[in-house]
Amino acid sequence: MKIKLAERFHNDRPAYTKSKTGYIKDVLERAKLWRFPPEGSDYIIVDLEATCWETGQHTNRMEIIEIGAVRIDSKTKEPLDDFSIFVHPTEEPTLSDFCKKLTSITQPDIDNALLFPDAFEKFLEWVGDGPHRFCSWGAYDLKQFRVDCDRNNIPMPDWLEPHVNLRRMFSAKREIPSTTMIQALEILNIPLSGQHHRGIDDARNIAKIAKIILPYLGL
Image (cartoon, rainbow, N blue to C red):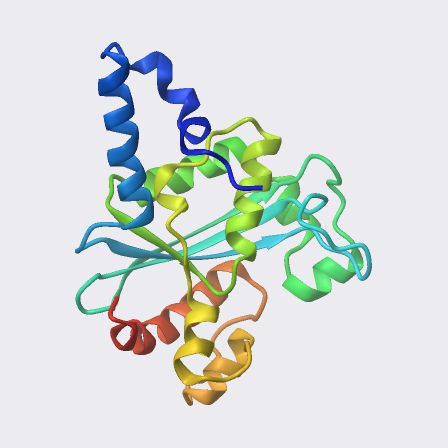
């Protein structure tokens, strides 16, 4: 169910001392930014890893255990810097054998990690002031951010909502079925680097794909 714009910005109401008309005008201006990030926005490529099991996968059960991200320049599409942090899950803090094998993330990695609110704050500090365009391979990362923010009563930052789904755009542009990141790398003759299903490594690989496809998408 889509959230109404007024509900989306409900938490901001106490900050406004303007008239009701002024408040609505400000909401609409922010809604415009939400839908259309301004030109010159750097791209933040994100890949999340989360608790997982061989069966019973669902974003509402899963919790983020790593945030990997790469910032790429809006004009050159070259990487500028990157970010990685492990996150300590609270609902099911013991990683499954399946999850450890898939991600190569170990139990000590997350036992010693920050809880999501603190890790997310560090991620936002790294991102810095806008404008930004949030990109990922598929819609999962956006959904998981929503789940973990809701679970921890953290408002979703506005810039995360104008999401660029690189997977969908890549498939549509090339007129092929939806592809995995690995398949896209193969199509573009880009070698996989690092460990697949590690957030930071996948974000770096997605950034390589983005450098090629974003100009063709007019972004």
